[in-house]
Image (cartoon, rainbow, N blue to C red; front, side, top):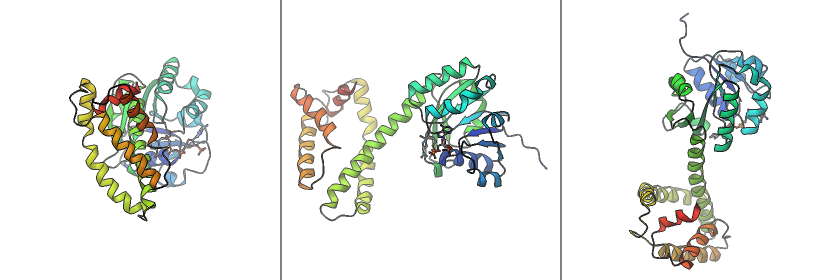
Amino acid sequence: MAETTKTPVIILGLGAMGQALAATFLKAGVPTTVWNRTPGKDAELLAAGAATAATVTEAIGADGPIIAVLLDHASVHATLDPVAARLAGRQLINLTSTAPGDARELAAWAAGHDCGYLDGGIMAVPPMIGRPGASILYSGSRTVFDTHRETLELLAAAEYFGEDAGFASTYDFALLATMYAMFGGFLHGAAMMRSVGVPAAEFGRRAAAWVGAMAQSLPHQGAVIDTAAYTDRVQSIAFHKAALDAINRASRDANVTLDFVAPLKNLLDRQVADGRGALGFERTFEELI
Ligand code: FVH
C-alpha cells in the first residue's frame, strides 16, 4: 500500500460544516481524526476512513493541526479549556465564526498556552466546500498559515490577511452584513409583490438579476468613500431620500411593514435635515462610524 505524505488533521466539531470539511479532507486522502461532543455524527466519515476519537484529549493526541469548527466562541473554550495544558507546541486553526474581539482573545489565550493560532472565516456553505467558489479568509499566525496552506487549499481558496487574528473575522462579518441586507431587502420586496399576486420564486428570479447588475457599482462606491469625494456625486442623498419616501408609500399601499427600510430612510432623512442633501449617497457611510 502506498504511504501517504499528506499532513494529517484533527477536526473538532461535526456539525454540517465540520462534516463537510472532514469529508473533503478524506476524499483528498488526508488522514483525518474527528471528534464531536454528541456521539453518532461520524458514521459516514468513519466509512470514508476517518479515525474517530471518543474524547477531545484522544483527538488532540493525534498528529496535525487542530481545526475547530464549533458553534461559537463559548463552545471553543468549552472544548479546549479542559485540554489547554496539552496544547503547547501545537497549532490551532479556528474556523468557528467568532467576533473579532473573540478571535483576538482566543489568539492571546492560545499564545498563553504556547499554541499557534490561525483564525478563519468561511465564505461558503457546506455543499460548496472543496468546490470552486468557496473561500476561507485567514488571519493570525503566518507560520500556521504557511505551514498548512496546501492542506487548507483543499477546502477552499485560502487567503491570508496578516497577524491580527481579528481581521479575518471582521471581513467575514462585513461580507455577511452586506449579504443580510440583500436578503432582508429581498424579503421586503417579496412581501410587496405578494400583495399583487406574484409568487416569491418568480420575484426571486427577477431580483437576482437586478441585484447582480446593481452590485457592479460597489467598487466605485467604495472608491468614493475612500477618497471622501462626496461632492463629486452621481446621485444625491436628496434623490435617494425621495426614492426611500416612495418605497415607504409603496410598502404601505402593499400593507408591508417598514421595519426593514426604516433604518436607511432615517439615515437619509437625518442628512437632509442637516443640510447635506446635495452630497452623494455614499456620504451615508460617515453616519455609521
Ligand atoms: N453552516 C454554514 O453554512 C456556515 C457557513 C459559514 C461558517 N459557519 C460557521 O461554522 C461553524 C460551524 O457551523 P455548523 O454549520 O457546523 O454548525 P452546526 O451544524 O450547528 O454544528 C455546531 C457544532 O458545534 C458543536 N457544539 C455546540 N456547542 C458546543 C459546546 N458547548 N461544546 C462542544 N461542541 C459544541 C455541535 O456539537 P453537538 O451539538 O453535535 O454536540 C456541533 O458539532 C459555526 O461557527 C458557523 O457560524 C457555518
